[in-house]
Each structure stands twice: as structure tokens, then as C-alpha cells.
Length: 378
Image 1 (cartoon, rainbow, N blue to C red):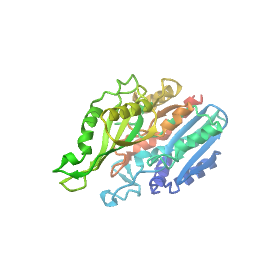
Image 2: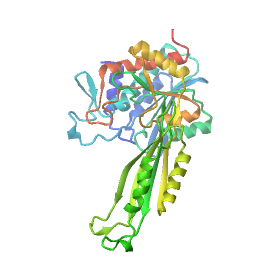
Image 3: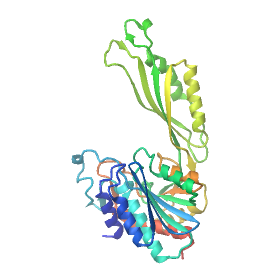
């Protein structure tokens, strides 16, 4: 097998369920240190972050990934043990194979090859990996980005190894992401007997009209880069379990995914105004997990597109869809950010896997982008 295959397997067999790194970053740091990288460990709380750099000054090009994975679920549901790398039908199976230990392995190998061929390259190349992407994402790249701001650490370009592709490697790249805003709502009523509704206040009935208006609202029209803002209720609960009791409260969790046509502050104000207008007695807490960002056409998008066209034989679609990624913490530093990785059809699923030909192609693809961005391509 190949060098990237061996490294991907070594990472997969480490059961790094978020936020446990399980030694993945030790393995990466040891390899990169042998190539002359300066490796800094940034541990915050239970989270490990690795910042490995080679070269000095600008421009600064960062390859960004995560070593943590989601839980595997019951191991007996897998064809083979989830943390035992297994080859079957031309694919490598194991938790993290697609999201995103193969990309991390490919980035490491690409950087090793780059500095071996160009030891005196201009600027700085770096690998940033965290063990807090699949979890609450507080002490991972979000926290590292604050450290970078405090230090004055610049980042010009960032390639995120998230599994972006749909049917074949390189057919889709992410050039931005929507913002994510979550509301946790408690509607207060008065508990009572269902036979005496005049002596109670049913929070389900009270919230129904407001919920209908929330779901029917057109929050914005979107723009050229982003679709219209979406509102989705993910959880709603009320009741005591008895069929003759009016509940005293209702809880609901909802989420906005929004582009630059709306702001988190604006959405919060509109929701709170709507709830006041309906006369509800509520408690409402908000969580902002990331602001929207988009990378305009420029040097990084051109280099990524050209490399994909040459090495993969496809013309990538540029998208801002999907969920969130750690790119949302790097973009506010002033960096151009593009996400490029393997196909994503199996991520977070039982029997997660990556095609072996995709895995073998990834290091060369990342290396080609790095060389183009640093002016090293022949």
C-alpha cells in the first residue's frame, strides 16, 4: 500500500472519539518534526490542538483538519470493528475514514513532500489540527483563533480537509458556509386539570400561533452566494405524561442557518419581538456557533480549481451549502478559505469508508495546491 494509506490506518485505529485525540497528534507531530517543522501543542481544557509550521514570514498557507471523530455506535452494527482499518471492495473502512482522518493523513504527507522538494520555499506552510471539531467546538480551532489574534498570527489562505465531494473527488468545493444560530426556548404556562382550562394556561396552545408564524416567516431572500435563511425546530416537548393534566411549560429548540443577507442580531431581535407580540411568558437563550463567510473568486479558489481540473479531470462546483466547519473560525482572521476533501456519502454512518483511489489521490492534490499558492509549481 501507500504512505498515505499507512498513515490513515494508523490514525483510524486510534479511537479518538471527541474530544479525545488518543495520540493522533503525537503521531503527526513526530513525522513533521523529522521534516523540520516546528510543532507547538496548544491544549485547552480536554482538547488537543497541534500547530506545525515550516518556513517563516508571509504568505501563510494553512492546511486545517481534525483528529476527533463521532462515536461509532454499537460495534456489532459494523461489518468490521469500527476502529480496525479494513479493506473491502476497493475501500478503506473505519470510523473517521472519510471524516476526516484520510484528509489529515493526506495533508501531512503533502506537506512532507512539499518541504522535501522545496526546503527553502517562500512564506510559511502549516498544519493545524484539533480534537474538538465534532464536539462543542469551544477549545479547538475557535480557541486557537483567539490565540492567533492575541499573537498577531496572520493566515492568508486556508484549505480545510472536510469531505466536500459528492460523487467523485473534487466535484464540489466549499467556498463558504452559512452561519448557525440556535435558540432554546421555555414557554411558561400554568399547570391544571384539563377539565378546568379556565384555571390553567396551556403553553402548547399559547405557543401554537407564534410557532406557526415563525415557520411561515420569510426571513430574507438570500443573495448570490447564499440561499434564503432557513428556520427549523429540532426539538419540542411538553406534558407530564398524564392525559388529564395541562402542562405548566413547553420547551423548544430551533435553529437558523443564514447567509450575509441577515445577521444573528437581527434574527434574534425579530424572534424576540414576535414572541412579545404574541404575549408569551418565555425564557430564551441563544447560542451562536458561527458566522457566515464566503471566499470570493481569487488566488486560492483559482489554485484549487486548477489543481482539481488537472489532477481529477473534473470542474468543481463552488458551494456554500452544508453545515458548519472549523473554517468559520479562520475566515474572520482575514483568510481565504476553501474546503476540499473526499466524498461524503458515508460520513457519521455505520461502515464509514473512503475509496482507495481517492485516498491515494489526495496528497498529490493538496501538494499541487500548496505549490501553486507559494509559486513553486513548475
